[in-house]
Amino acid sequence: MVIGIIGESCTGKSTLADKLKCLLHAEVYTGKDYLRFAKDEANAKKLFQKKLDEAVSGQHIIYVISEKEHLTLLPEKTFRILVTADLNIIKERFALRMRGNLPAPVADMLERKHGCFDNEAHNIHIVSGQSDLDETCASIQNVINTM
Image (tube, rainbow, N blue to C red; front, side, top):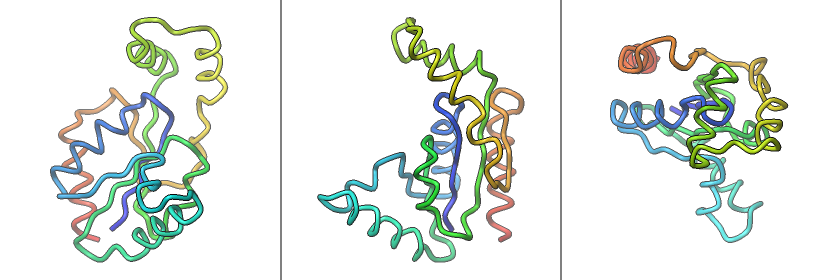
């Protein structure tokens, strides 16, 4: 099964993917990791999409997406998890990535992008910091194992 974890930067997608990877014994791909499949981007995307399309029952592939353009790579039957966070939390986490400094252009970009995934189709919506991560992962694991 393909599991798409979708959301803006610094919402907790990678943390969720790491936990689910262990629980589901899944392969995890992030962003442009598909470029490992071929030297040119067009072929790499095709090969990656083929891998996702051919995922069989019991084989879990997690694809972490923070760019809307990558949504088109997901197969139709993907189990989609939308991960969101308050804008202030996103800014705080992004500042930590930048050694405590969040330049105005970066803050502006985060503000412009905030909410860009909110209307995307999803099976589960997780708001970062509002629930226990272990409980959330156990719940997702139960749902996926019954599909």
